[in-house]
Amino acid sequence: MSLTGQKIPAPRSPYKARRAGNFELNSWLFMRGSGVLLVVLVFGHLFVNLMLGEGIHALDFAFVAGKWANPFWQVWDLAMLWLAMLHGMNGLRTIVSDYATKDRTRFALKTLLYFATFATIALGTLVIFTFDPCIDPNSTLAVCQN
Amino acid sequence: MASSPAGTLYRGREGMWSWVAHRLTGVLIFFFLFAHVIDTAMVRVSPEAYNIAVETYKNPIVGLMEVGLVAAVLYHALNGIRIILVDFWSQGPRYQRQLTFGVAGVFLLLFLPFVWTHLTNVFGG
Image 1: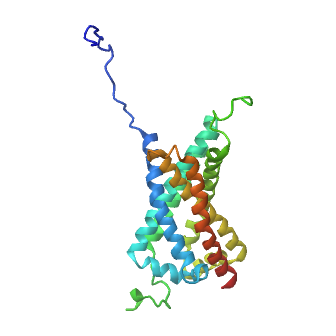
Image 2 (image 1 turned 120 degrees about the horizontal axis):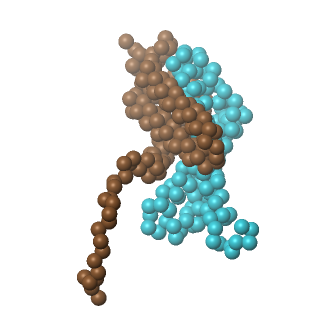
Image 3 (image 1 turned 30 degrees about the horizontal axis):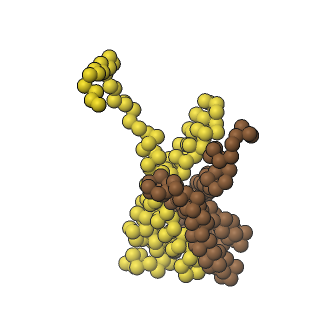
């Protein structure tokens, strides 16, 4: 039952490691990883903003200022912004690849998609980092009382 | 195609429809994100500009649209967890159909209290 009688010749061309990495596998993993984080981030966001207190009626500049005066919510919203935009971008990339059959259409749609996504991420990030909670002179926030 | 034996294609039934719904809700949520980042960016313009933007959300019609948005988010999140379980849990593929019913059950459990609280806020506040 042994195979010692058989000699398998070595392959003539050596094994070549994949050069380009594995983008599709990584993006597949990213969808699952970011998905789990987004469940927590988005449910927390919806609960705090819509379910607590008066819900939607409590939302105004002072509400946002109160949240973003706290680094905890800045990091929360920043993580949510980046993960949601990239998760959505990758989802739409898959949909464009599935349904846009012409090369030029696919290229145009993906270019638009990447541009819109990164512009929105840049805008949101800039807003979170340059936001001044004390811009309202009537603010009653503790951080604005000095 | 039409005469294929039943049950051999990934077509129809819970598997396909949950996939279709996942795509539709995903696209809907992604498009909403653009609007939502822009309306929130108004905090950087002025308190008045933001208050005008957020006032739109307190309109009863937009309040009802928000119920639809939250339904999409809840479904996409719960079905996403189902997809992760099918992919990574050893028993996931065997129970994928039961997991679909689990998604429906948890969806109702979270969605109905949301609708009650949110619509009370929208129409009662």
